[in-house]
Amino acid sequence: MLKQLMNRLIRNAPKASINPPSIPNAMISILDSELNSPYVAAECKRRPKEELNQFTMAFSCYILWLIKRSLESITAPEQTSLILKEIVESITQRSWYQLGLFEKIWDSIQDYLPTMRPGRHTGVLMPLVHVVLAANLAGCQLNNSNNPEFNVYAIALMKIIPEQVSSFMKT
Image 1 (tube, rainbow, N blue to C red):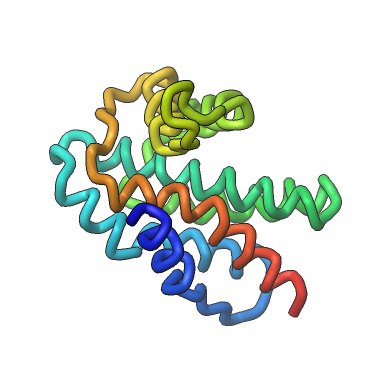
Image 2: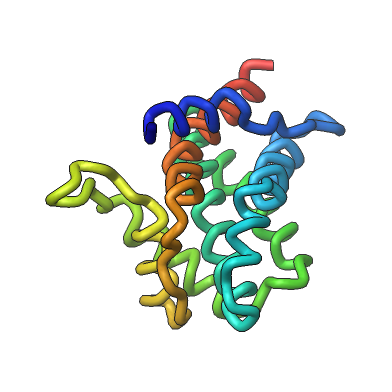
């Protein structure tokens, strides 16, 4: 069942619309597409109101990290840095952005996510657990999601985002 759900998520992943066709705008479109997905909307409804901004910042950092990893494999380091700078600039304009806390979460995500490993007893990599832990190490007070569909969505993004980035870069 888990594999079927994962395959369905990947098959039905929203295609980010890219207009105008610039790399930073395309990456921002990918970020927005995922932040506005029905899975994120449903997860936000399940969370206490006081967690929403922190959760959205943490999840956007996860998506940003996936975009960064994808770009690093196909662009020069300087180009990746410039693209990320523009994406972060767009994030600073969001209502949920909190100066200082976002940057702490982003730093924690970059330190912690590269070391994530599958669970010792399950053998399954649960990136959302690591995202929440990284955010909490940065000063947030988030609880882990207990929704299996949202957790599978977070796993599927590890495949979906690189495919979207790669697809755009080929055009």
